Image (cartoon, rainbow, N blue to C red; front, side, top):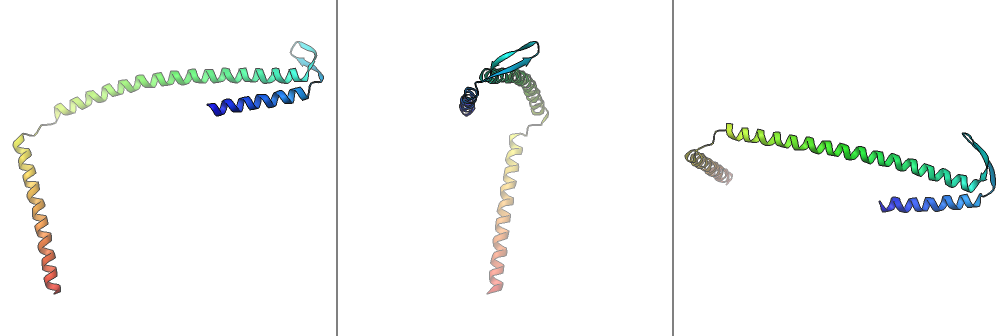
Length: 132
């Protein structure tokens, strides 16, 4: 944001210097206006009008973006509510294992791990014996 502001100031200074170096009178025809004006004045007015138009487009774009953000936030809240409802429904539909089933499962898992460890140790021992 600050870099853009600094560039705008530098551009304004350069345009002003250019306009002041070209200060001769010129004939100006615009719509129903016809007359003479300083070239510097024409340049500065043209740049000013261009900046105002650019600013108006920028304001419109910001308004449009804020409106879109607001709509998306509403959609996000609605979707979060639906997600919470589905998670609650899923929790209610899933059977909860009893404590004894959980204990049996963990005990059988521990035994399997121990069996695998013992089996791998026995196979390593038999390999070492055959190599010797």
